[in-house]
Amino acid sequence: MATAAANPLLRFEDSNGDPLAGGTLEFYESGSSTPKTAYGDSSESTSFTTKTLDSRGEAVVYFGSGSYKLVIKDSGGSTIKTLDPVIGAITSVAASSEWISSGDTPTYVSSISFTVPGDKTASYEVGRRIKTTNTSGTTYSVVAASSYNDPNTTITVENQSGTLDSGLSSVDLGLMTATNTSMPRIHEGSMRVIGCNCANNSSTPNTQFDMDADAIVLRNSKNQTVTVWNPGAAITNNISTAGPAANGRDQAGAFSNSSWVHFYWIWNGTTLATISSATAPPTGPTLPSGYTHWAYACSVYLNSSGALRLVVCTGNTVSYGIADGGATQILAAGQQTTMTSIDCSSLVPPLPGLIFLHGTILVQHTSATSFAGYVRPDGGFFENNGRRIAGAQVAAANQSASADGSIFIPNISQSIAYRINSVPATSGGLYLSIDGYTVPNGG
Image 1 (cartoon, rainbow, N blue to C red):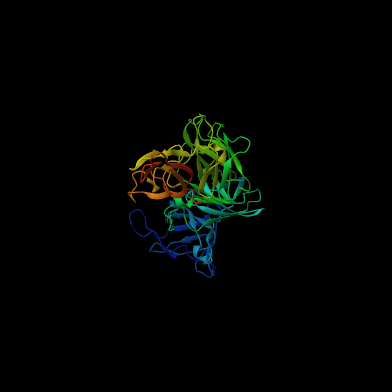
Image 2 (tube, rainbow, N blue to C red):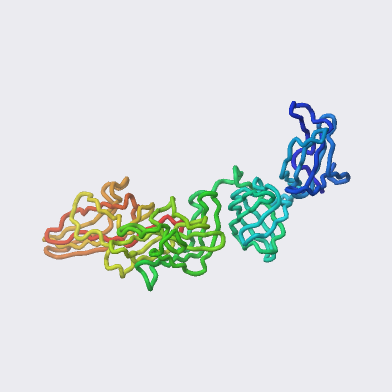
């Protein structure tokens, strides 16, 4: 059954605003000169490829499926305007359908591109989802580029399920347009890693980093579209590979020693890869040619010798490896009784998250007394006296005591503050180390 694209009563005026009496409407396949049938009623009892307007410049028109080219002429046969495409029979799509038949005949070009006749850049706008029928089955994609070069429009896509093949036979358009859609916009939080599992490469730990996860949600910063991938196996990033290069770094020159390296997954429509960058999220990396999407994994410090610190990233928590030689200690025998700052910038990244602190009180004293150590974010906005991390009780004169504790505190400006409640009379104090930190990867 045919239906109207909007109101079935079409009305046209000439340049003076008068009814286009005696004018004609000519109906063609979109992008071609092949006549296409329109109808005078929804039951299709009358049909035509040309319709003459009455004295009021009006005609009742119902469209069939697919897209039309509509040529409007005056009574003398001169063309006033050509409209292409005019989407027909939108309301004939089932209420549950998300897709509209484009009515176009696609020509396969490659696994990520095809052409259709005519200027269809308005229909195939960047960011719009499409569904195609191929020999391999149905493929879902997002339009990455659309350009017209007479007589065809070339559409380049980012495949999200399957790929195009030489059996490409039809194209459906997503009901929602990409521009000014009624759907809410996707935000930074849409990027995330599920089951993140990353660590230094066992053979080349100083310069290579193995990245794996159960699933990765990657985001296109420009068009705000997402794709979800399962890596299947760890992908190794080599920070020694000059870039921007997939599975290398995103800059030509080497990263600076004593700096943070941020690791990302990237995607080019068909291939999942990795990249390392000196640029932290939310700005993200410089992508190699052809790559459009990225998702943040974690950050690792490059020490003064140009070697990556040994870490394991599980979920959103990064833990320091035992083999890192005690490099995580940030305080030895601290005895300050007022809050004192400690710089942690080489041990926690410049990102929102938590710092995992381990503390030990180790003291000797000339009499029985209690000791406690406290920590907080430097300049912390809560608990002016800090949060207790460890405490010990000296039971008798000239004896020693020790105790351990652990705590997560917010990472604010990559620094913490500490104090103890009483200074040991002979030796000892508070010892602190950073065992790890969390990163904003959504895990």
